[in-house]
Image (tube, rainbow, N blue to C red; front, side, top):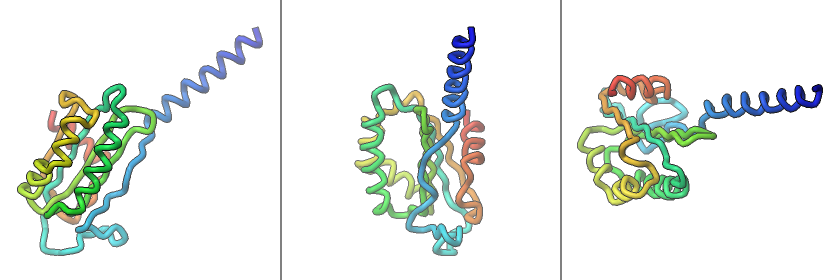
Length: 160
């Protein structure tokens, strides 16, 4: 009986640990050519409002490698994206959910990035089925950058 109790307790500890770890995230801090992370401000003061895109998706089973490869290509192409202020990516540590957030000088600048070859390839073969993707687009005062992930999540929930 004592052995069964120890096994049960060990299983319970493992189960609780996995539950807690599923709520852990990894990602990049908000960064980009138009944002100063040390000061937490835009590098140019001419934009008093910025256009923010927030996305959430679920990586399909077996799609983590495709997602990772495409994410690298998209991040590399971002440095050449006119109008980009900054971006951040967040992923569940032990799950399949992923979020992105980017800030732009205009809707047109975001549209140009969305239609770029790297982004189109990622959408087509990025390991995230389109029916799992949710997006929110909004204008925010520039001093609110970067948005917290909690705030970004609230914007996504309002879009449903």
